[in-house]
Image 1 (tube, rainbow, N blue to C red):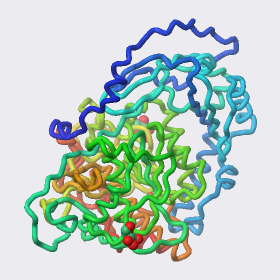
Image 2 (image 1 turned 90 degrees about the horizontal axis):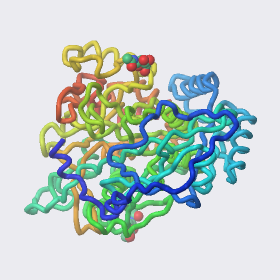
Image 3 (image 1 turned 180 degrees about the vertical axis):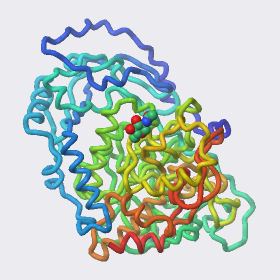
Image 4 (image 1 turned 180 degrees about the horizontal axis):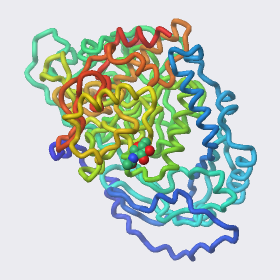
Amino acid sequence: MFFRSALIFVLGASAATAVSLEAKKAPRTPVEAKEAPRTIMEQDVTVFEAPRWARGERVKGDEPVTLTFFLKHCPYQFAKFHADLTDRSDPASPNYGKWLDVEGVKARLKPSADALEAVKNFVESMGGVPAVDKFESVVSTTVPAKSVEEHLATVLHHHGHTERNAQVIRAVKAYSLPTEVAKHVSVVGDLVRFPRLKPAALVQEAHPTEAVDDDSAWTKCGSSYSGFVNPHVLAERYGFEFPKLSHAKGNSLGLAEFQRQYYDDPDLEAFTKACKLQTNVTVSKVEGGNDPKACSGGFQGCVESLLDIEYAGAVAGAIPLKVYYATDYSLLSWANQLLSKDGVPPVHSVSYGNDEAQQTGRAYMDSVNTAFAKLSATGVTILFAAGDQGVWGREGVGTKYHPDFPAGSPYVTAVGGTDFKEKGTIGEETTWPDGGSGFSNDFTRPKWQDSYVEKYLAEAKGSLPKFPHVYNASSRAYPDLSALAGVVNAYLVALEGGKRFASVGGTSAASPVVAGIIAQINDRRLSAGKSPLGWLNPALYKCGEGVFNDVTTGKTSGGIVGGFPAAKGWDAATGFGTVQYKPLAKCLVAN
Ligand SMILES: *[C@@H]1O[C@H](CO)[C@@H](O)[C@H](O)[C@H]1NC(C)=O
Ligand SMILES: *[C@@H]1O[C@H](CO)[C@@H](O)[C@H](O)[C@H]1NC(C)=O
């Protein structure tokens, strides 16, 4: 742990500015209680501060604030929707791959017209113009902070991250809605609860060594940067098409990037050139704007998004890449952004998450999960980096493991991490000790996982964590599969137009690699006139153990204690292990 912290970014200058903001007592009069009965929202959230977020000034009355109201879904309706989705995701079903369009989702999962009216009216009473999403279940608006404080009976403050250049607005006390409105609303997005910024993947400057004169995959990215994982090493180990020179109509790959993690073309060109790729790594479309200048300021600028783009791009080859920038660190707004757009890529990689423990709000997790279910039902595969702190999560060692959200969501395919067993040898892999893994505390175990998890629990019994109360073995287990992520041979990333290279690790490296592989499999499906993979997990678990490189050694102790051991077959350290492209593609294209 300490070793890794030492490698993480230096403080950003503007983050320091944010920290120095003093919490001033605003001279405004307290909000008067409204007469209509009110309901406190997200009642299980009781803490309105977070480590590494410093409270700044109260938000000025006329500052615009965007509110997003997520309407409730009837649990019975959602259960039916889930059952229908499960059927469409089962390769043995005649309905496999028959994904829904917006009308199809709405017909099955739409709040009542009354509910929508009530929320729209409330927004209008705030002085806002309600914008309704195309699924008719999310209403958003932008209104002055004063109106939010008054109508939601709360107080808003700016907050700045103490280590990163990031700002958010959050309520510093509970918020409430008139009961008549509250009964239709699950959460108002991102008012309480702070995002956990993914710590930068392990970063160090990669220094050129003596030029190596051999022809192995290790030296393909410039002979003086030998020994790093690069696209050639990945291709040799995982066997995907390399180079991938063409793409099927309608295929693409999406990457989620957050606040200030931008990219610039000179870096992508430098990577393409240094690694002698036969396909250019380029971004075909950016949603949410880009600021390439952010990438000239050393490591901090762009390393995480460059890692995603360089590796997803190198694996996906000619398949177009789309980058989605979310202006805030919000899983809900990211999912909502995808749900509101047409032509969304059929696979997405996201290297961003939270500990479940920190997502104290059940309603919040349910809203995110519902958004993921809708995306899955429209034929979108969602991959998440499983986390970079082993079982302990970002909360650190305690009396319980800290599972990651949304890696623990059943609609997400969670990507864990491995290292090469022998440094510099493309061959067997072992568990990366810091790979996120284990059992959710909030989501029940899906049927498609049952037999694998039961077998693991029985066979690995002797080497499982000694204290069963530190995890909940009856819930959703993750990761589902893994890819190289560790520091035995770190990934080589081009920065600053190729003037510098960084060595980077973490499941945020593994996830875009797997996304590139899934994009290649989607390409084969689309070329054969089939639908994209969509919700992947049920089909992945049906393919099962034979189509992966099994990882049987190591455990996810976070470099400290405890953790889940790898074992023969599926395990809670690396899932099925890492991809063998040919048999996996054969299995996933068959139906
Ligand atoms: C890659 O980019 C270079 C320079 O911009 C161009 O000459 C080349 O044709 C491109 N290759 C492919 C496969 O698009
Ligand atoms: C364990 O998980 C299951 C399903 O996710 C849940 O119903 C149960 O309450 C959990 N047990 C504990 C002790 O948290």
